[in-house]
Amino acid sequence: MEIDEQHLANLMSRIQAGDGEAYRQFLDLLYKIIEPMVRKRTAHNQDDLVQEIMFSVHEARHTYDPGRRFLPWLHAIVFHRVGDQKRSYWRHQRRIQAWQDDGITSGDGVSGAVKDQLLSEVRDLPETQREVITMLKYHGYSLVEVAEKLGISVAGVKNRAYRAYQTLRDRLTESAV
Amino acid sequence: MKQDEFREILIRDLRPCRRLASPQTQLQRFMGIVLVLSISIIVFGGVREDFAQQTGRYSYYGEMVGLLLFVIAAGFAALFLTRPGFPVKKPLLACTFIASVWPLYVVSTAPDVETVLPHSDISCAGLVVMSTILFGSILLTMLSRGYLARPLLTYFAGFLCATAVGGVLLHFVCPGQGLHHLLYFHLAPIYILPVPFALALFIWQRVIR
Image 1: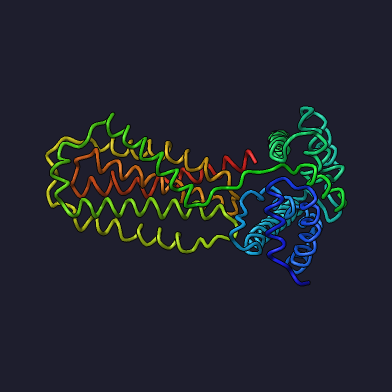
Image 2: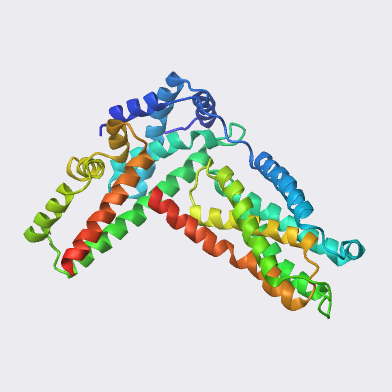
């Protein structure tokens, strides 16, 4: 696919001024550019990653300087998000391996007793934390979707989720001791 | 979520945004604030007793220029790091080069004998800590408007810039010239303090975000 960098830069200038129509065009083009890049660089959660990159571009749109080239700006964001996702994926894999080694999970998932205890602890979480955890982990919504549904920022969702994980970790550690 | 729904959410969320000023402009603003606050601190704390004599020494100016270049290089490195696609290698290399050469220059030009003028080791280190907190907060507020792809390195460069400003202030207020004093209470805090400050901020940011 041939990329017209100047056109993208012009669209970006209009987006910075709040032009919704330019943004619609831009997002179509952006998807066509980043989707193959993501498919080439990672095999895991590609669709989620494409959306995460688009969200990062959305959040970082004020950092683009129309006097500079557009593609290096975009590539820097894409590489950062891909690297982040890879690190997060391998961290997750190592954690699952550790749980399997400790007998907390089997190949089929979390063992019955642990699952019951976890569900009970999730029910005891404060309302604000419980709804975030349920939406993220049970319904499988993304951070952006949860933020949209609850009418809070993505940082707010992350904050509540972090507090919930911390509470669950503390309670489960206490009961294990 | 489907791609179409996701795009609609982003489009609904679109607002006109104020474009981030260029790193040069941001550094100029930062230096302007630093100048005003530094003058206030120097006026409040008092200029070193041997200031008039020092102005006749070439090495005094050499150290000052080295420190100012250090501040500028670290500031540019931090600001460039928050702009996706900016060439960060040059300011990082400049910063590393100055950071390596400057202590050698200070050591080679330090007088052999300890000054007889009164000075306090602790207050010198304290001034660098205060400078790190004050100027670091100002610079990091500016940096937080950018895109933090490498937050730890950005925080480190930002705090390095702030501690180097503390080094400039020490040049105006502390008459201590002994090698021991310069090494442990002027140089060491500038190099060491950015590490815990950057790490603490990085961990705190991960908790919040």
